[in-house]
Length: 197
Image (cartoon, rainbow, N blue to C red; front, side, top):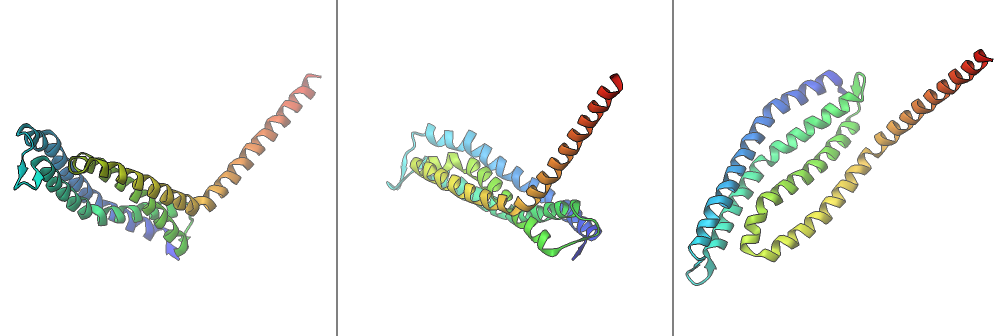
């Protein structure tokens, strides 16, 4: 069992530690992407996209270099993203607990939030990588997109299954509240009718 206050404190500390590192990593990736798309690739195309050493076009080479740089930056912030998802899971587990939180609940929330984070990170990475993948081999971008969509659906389905118990409990509580409010309103209407008679 994990103490609620301890879980909140650890989660808060992890957020304070990891979010600035993620922000710096994303800013670096964005600057690399921005310079690549707006300056370096247009320059390579302006030069007529000559073949270097008769093997590869300049535009494809520049795209590959920028793609590798972006991959390195994204992998650099990957651990911090996992830490933030664990912290979010800690917050979520603590929100639904009184004093003690079962370890398996915290672990289930961590897996679910990690699944969501994986999908978000993969989509953002794909959007960053898209101009450069298409600059190397255009058809590869489409193949990667199809694989990304299939993988994201599987991960999100699995994540939904992890939350299904909580969602079912929430839906049952919500329907009980709605039903009790409906019964109270019906009782008030019946009393009002009796008073009018």
